[in-house]
Amino acid sequence: MKLTKIGIGLLLSLASLWAHAQPWEFDKLVKVTSTHGAKIFHHLESSGRHNIAISAGTVAVAWEDDRDGTPRVYLARKGRDKQEFSKEVKISGKGEAYEPSLVALNRNRFVLAWEEDSRIHLRIVTPTKLGPTIILGKGEAVQPSLTIDGQQLLLVYSQREVRYGRIWMQRIEIDGDKLHLKHGCAVDAEPAKDEQLYPAVVSVADRVLVAWEDRRPGHTIIMAAQNHDRNSCSFDSPQRISEGLPGQRPAFGKGHGVSRVALAAYGTGKILAVWADKRDFREGHDIYAAHNLSGKKQLFGSNIKVQDSFGGIAQQWHATVAGDPSGRLVVGWDDNRDGDANIMLSWPEGESWSEDFAIPGADGEGEQNHPTISLDREGNLHLAWIARTTIGGPTQVHYLFGRVVK
Image (cartoon, rainbow, N blue to C red; front, top):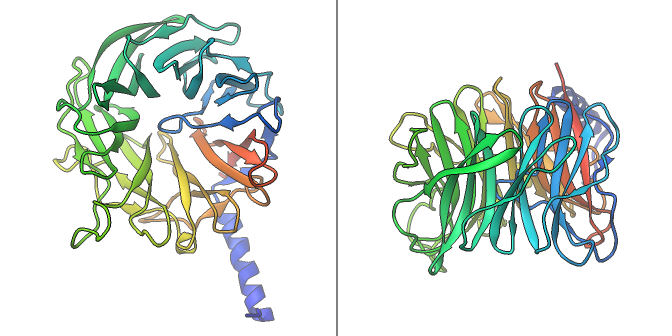
């Protein structure tokens, strides 16, 4: 169908209004990684999607790649006013390492947690040195995710117990540039009856919330539990976040799938959970979200589809979310509605979500996927993702800065 001159004019007018309405103006992209090649693969795969963080004047990005034939964890940093990242620093040891989770401390310092040889490792990175590495326990543990809780760290992960992974939380004391393990516990007091995987954790003033993938119904759902007492490691009984399909049980399988929950705190004590959800099996995964209901028996409110109607015929993956104390909130994901993978954003507008926004520099030919986002204290958006100039081609890690529109 051909567009009339009136139709084209209307589209251009709408595009102009849309460009004016977006909350961020984006700079030119910056390459994070310096080592690339046909046999080198970069991954931004942390549980809860915590691969980017901002401390004072420094932006840091953590990833895993196999440049020397073995998967290892690396970190690159840059000043917020600089146009290039520093040479990457190897964080992990001699073993195979995966899924680094990154969180910012004060004074341009960061903490990383990662899986290496099926155990969880952690260390602090300062502007001038790497702190000592600590290792959790002796059992198999994977998929770490970090957050700050006052003057402590909270680490969640999936620990293998007999047959299944079970979600655990560990409190960690920060002592200068050293870390000390404190108390920890299983988030769900009931022993795992099936796999519990890919946890995320967030802390607000009156509670800590952990969410994860859970397969106890025979298919994957999103579960969550809260802790209201900083002096204990006791969580309330977990509740399901992702809603089931209405009506009778589906003809095939036990239910639809969901994938990779991420959490963000925003405003005063508010929390949003996001994930990829395949409840509409004809159209692949969609991005869904739910708001935490503080102080109520029901842990989360109704599920909300974040993406707009134009995304309904495409597949969405790798949901990531960021918020700030002023109340800003934004969700990102990768999306193949234009025939190749691009990074999309959406944010609340009143009681609904904005139209999806394809980020300039993170769309177009090739593939742009696996986004990770963070908001700094001014509300500026920091984004990193995996980029390929051709579909299935060599990978790089790219970065964009989005300056908040006042």
